Length: 98
Image (cartoon, rainbow, N blue to C red; front, side, top):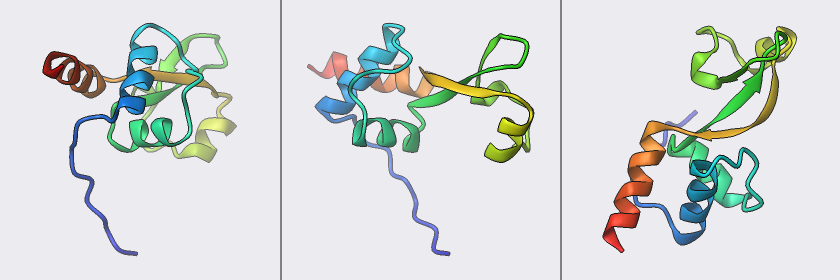
């Protein structure tokens, strides 16, 4: 398998709208597709899960080493997306550049 590095770049207008929706608290923005894919690819957002106990946790808060199958078997359910610190700084840079 070939490793393809991901270079940091500013978000496109559609990705910017997706980040703004996440920043405003919308966990499932209507703007999705490529914008949502690139958001996860660049680390601007991450999946948020509902635990079996009912609490909401971002992917980064789950135990290390759990792949997607282990997460489902443990009873976690994906309920949306949340903006990361990297996404917040990309959003701030894009807004300040306008």
